[in-house]
Length: 406
Ligand SMILES: Cc1ncc(COP(=O)(O)O)c(C=O)c1O
Image (cartoon, rainbow, N blue to C red; front, side, top):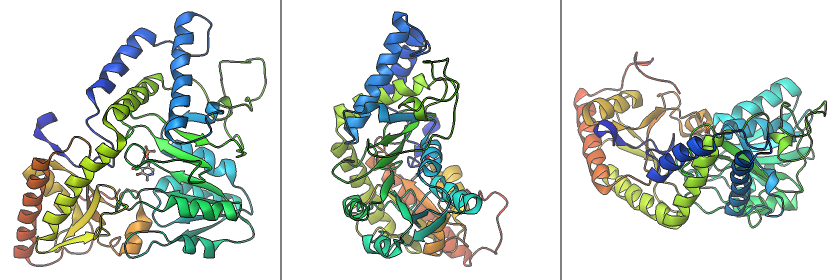
């Protein structure tokens, strides 16, 4: 790993990527770096084939409708995908139910819809273990409720939500079920049809092992989405308006073909290693980490008493130390990279009561972490905790100059 860094920030982005991903990105861009679907020569058609085959492959991977692979559309990332689908499904007078576990990529588009278009939204809380009770969602349903949006795996506390139960509820009440799988795709199996998921939003650069700059939506064939952007499609150029057919309906301009190549190679790597094995490896290390952190006086752990239905993302704080300072000490003194602050999910911290104390320290274990790295991390936190206890008191209110609010 570069400069001897121990990387526990895989929830931000999985890193490093498998070697085959780097190699295929490089090779594909050198040999097929032409604009796909814009021209009729062989190389352009070959590049277009990879794009089409990736739609098929990812639709199968997510258990979507395999007879409509064109409804797997590519975006810049999951934030972009959610910004297309939220106003594409909802408008003035509609009510949406979502959760306190959401990332700002859901919270902000929903809040804009409420403020700017007169929609209504309910954010349901999670329970003390970090799970959203389907009954909470049921209680929030109104006559004008149109959709339910749920973050499958929390990027802050790592809990994995009961999609089957929530999906069943959505089907019974005819609500469109949208799921953000940014944290789970590539580690937890997802089957849209079996789970009654109508729209799935994913990002390429986390456990799918693709690159930054690509994400997408997988949209079941019965779902109607308003098209809100327009531009070039490479086909039917004479048409004065954006095409209504998929994939063009939700794709605009030249696609990120290096990202397509990365996602393709990421799928190869996942096939070779097996999603269950990768998850097993990460959870073995996460259990060891939790076990070790639990023994340290002054360490507070959140929502990880049991690691069932959980990702390898662990949130903690050290009593008497600002989380930002803990992150800096881990980095500067121990070469350990973690993410501190609010993790772009302020409602999680508001509900945990950690928002006013600058959030928490998040360790997110990835496929390439080792047991040795976990042992080093536990020792580092133990040292920091001793330092904090010796120093004695909580930090003054207000931000330390280097504390990042994220
Ligand atoms: C649950 C969740 N949703 C959305 C995002 C945003 O991802 P991106 O920056 O790739 O759009 C993240 C990133 O951390 C996330 O964890």
